[in-house]
Image 1: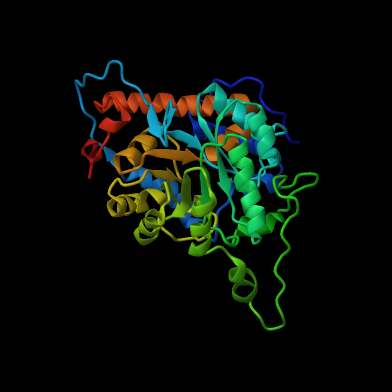
Image 2: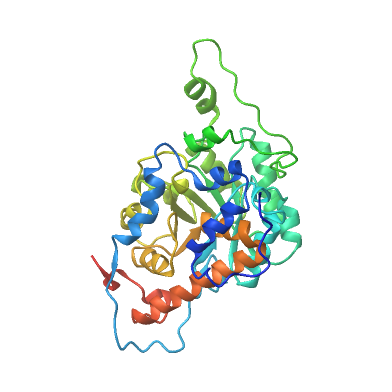
Length: 363
């Protein structure tokens, strides 16, 4: 029997990792496998988390850090802390409040939420609540008119940036999802889109991948088009290769998100944290870098910033909190991570995010 959402946070939930069993008890088997699984043998998904263990904090004593803070400025906006909510599709699959509950939890903790194109609440409805600071994540559509409509809607509704996801032109091989027979249950649907794009048809003997999907998949030409059309800062999400990061910058991207899609698309690519230093070296601070993947502790946030990130995104942790306790869970998870980050900063002698660097790590 699926349990109802929590109405108070139990005393044994003291880290974001503690939400997982509570979430599992409140989700169908299909929903849990969709949330918890990765591509292939899930090596990359597991590596995302494990990579942080291999980076050791140096710790610095007797630091004068009174009056410190976790604030940062991005694209002319001030954010109270660098822990952002990554775009996650179909959030009503995990809680009846869906994206609106997430936005409320983000607002309470003065956090930034990135809304997915594939949300189960329209971008207008989320914006109308006037709660959280919002960016909009864009999956480029085969019809540029549809993509342009999404861009203009986000601009009109006050979203502050566009995050274009580029690493998932087709779904990864997610065996756990396949075994669970995952389908999006009615009446849930990606309501920002008027219709779900049809699966490309191929002839006998042709490849679904090479003859069907990829001929109409986004390319760098589409990124150039977005950068020309958008009136908002555009970040490119799904970057692992330094060469791709530099190309995005040279085309005019305002920032990049180092991400492997939570290990959900291509297995055995590097953990996001392992890719981060190479991307940072290529970009040399010319545009902001965000890191997405594997963040479970405030110390993880600190390590990512020390290795070159401006901010981080979390995905599964806040969705597990949403599934367990709705907006209350999201707010508690964000507050927990921020408090952990403050403790690590204080014990590392860093008063602000700008003080965090590789000299605070044992490398």
